[in-house]
Amino acid sequence: FAKAVEMCNNNGTCRKFDAGTMCPSYRVTRDEQHLTRGRANTLRLALSGQLGAEGLSNPELLAAMDLCVGCKGCKRDCPTGVDMARMKVETLHHYKARHGFTLKDRLIAYLPRYARHAARWSGLLNLRNKIPLLAQLAEYVSGLSAQRSWPTWHNTHFFNQATQGVTKEAVLSAHKPVVLFVDTFNGYFESSNAQAALRVLQAAGYSVHVASKTEGGHGANKGHLCCGRTFLANGMVDKAREHARELIEALLPFADQGIAIVGLEPSCLLTLRDEALVLGLGDSAQRVSQHAVLLEEFLANEAKAGALDSLKQQLAPAEKTILLHGHCHQKAFGLMPPVLDVIRLIPNAAPELIESSCCGMAGSFGYESSHHTVSMQMAELSLLPAVRAKPDAIVVADGTSCRHQIEDGTSRQAIHVAQLLSDHLKH
Image (tube, rainbow, N blue to C red; front, side, top):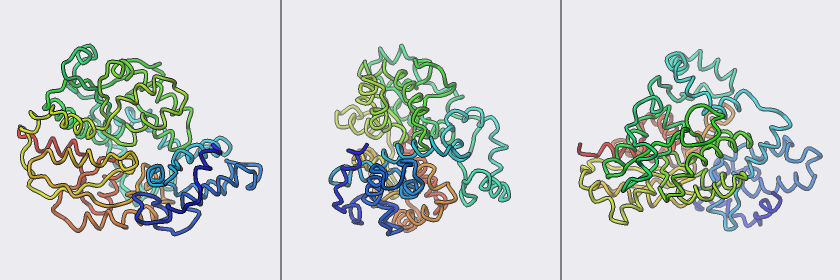
């Protein structure tokens, strides 16, 4: 951990506003402690004992890490590749182990575990968004801002619908096989995205298998497969490891056959190529990571190989301007070019990339009442003004929280690239 901290050599690139994504919080507060360099220096003090015996569980350190949105911009933009997002997870793990978890922490972290039960009570839970008094009460109890709308629950969702995907045996012997990993957010809250991805892949001639727990794992956690991201974001590393292990064991048979594992939510899919590799899960994690790709990555690579000619013939021409906002993790992994390439498969499409830092929502960050103001300040730097400037454009954003921020800030409905492609299918 000390070596990871020392990767920051105080070069100050994180202070620049033209360095891609980082550092979103510093861009709005202009406070050195809310900077990658400032956080690294505070971590040095904690590790050397200069913040007292509490070390990584010191409240002063937590204050310095509080506005880190886990964007991973520093991992890409910093010349030395400092990964402050990963260090925040470790810091939270130590702090929460000593001081305990709040109700908010548990509500966010355990979402993948209780989502299937909560969905059955969708009508009741959705009242929170309709009755201001309930929103205020929820903020008082949970710490989640009453000024935010919560994701809408649905009694009927992707995981309890007939997906029309092929079986495990069928995909292992298929001519054009692919495995679709549907995350909690696109499975329960925005099922149309998962259905759209399935529709597009099938239109391109692929045999699609939807990954499920029946493929493997210990079966300790009932429900759908989960990467563990919500647990990591709240410092619950051990719980995250449980989910990541179960997901990897379920996906391993497909990875060993060289079958692509396609995901929709950047933060979830890319967990397989990042944090899952340092959770002590062995060679299995490495093998799965080599075949884990976002939908746009998969389609862009297949297009370059000439495998999408039939799909391109089925796409109707674009009639509107298309604006694209990139999820922070897409940017950190250099995955914006594939999204642009995939959108250009649509005849006449000329996507315009919004040059922006973090949208400000950053998972649960922007939902928290203590972060609402700074979250909106991040969004207003460039993203929301760019969306408002073109009221007739289609806005594409692959991140669940990004789409929510755009809707809250502009009353515009952004869509996933899977939905964009599906909408342009002729049949």
